[in-house]
Image (cartoon, rainbow, N blue to C red; front, side):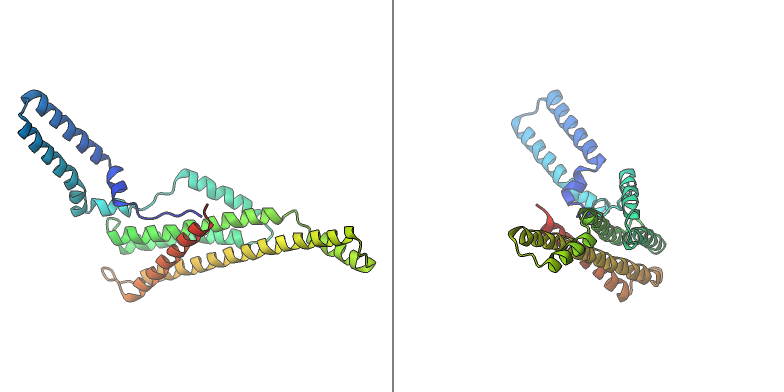
Length: 260
C-alpha cells in the first residue's frame, strides 16, 4: 500500500521556490561583496556568520509566518495520473461478479469529496487544522484504494481455479476408491489448489472489511464536522479525527509489514 502524509520540515523548505531564490540572491550578494570590496579575512569570517544565520533563520521565518506548516500539511491535489489510475481500477473491478469492490470505489470518491466540501465550509484552507484533516483523510482514502487494487490482483490470481472441477474430480476419486500413488498425488494437488483459492478469498474479505471500516470512519468524520458551529471544535470532532488518524496509522503499519 502507499500512503501520503505531512512532508518533513526540511523537504517543505527545500521544495519552496522562494527558498532557492533567496539562496541564489544571498550567494550572489556575498560573492559580489568579496569581489568588489576584497575584504580582510576577519570581515569575510563575519560575513560567513551572517550567511549561516540567514540560512538557519529562513526556516524560522517560514515557521513564524505559517508558511512552513502550510507547506508541510498542504492539501494534496488529485493528479491526472491518479484519475487515470482510478478509472483503470474501476474498469477492472466492473468485470468482477461481486459488486462490493466497485461499490466501495465509488463510495470512497463520494465520501472523500463530501469531507472536503464540509471542511471548506467549516475551516479556512490556510489553517493548519484544515490541512491536517485533509492530509489524514487522504492517507485513509489512498490506503483503501490500494486495498481495492490488491483485491483486483487477488481475484485475478484465483480466476483460473475451477472449484466446480475440483469438487467433481475429488468426488470421482472418492467413488473409485483408488489409492494408487498417482491418485494420492492428484488429491494432494487438488487440495492445494483449493487451499490457495481459500487463502486468497480470505485475504479479499479482510481487505474489503478494512475498507468498510474506512468508509464508516470517513462518514463519521464528515458528520461530526457538519455539526460543528462555525469557529468551534466540539469533542465529537476531535474523537472522529482521532479515529481517522488511528486508521491512517494502522495503514502505515500494514504497509511496513507488507513491504520488502
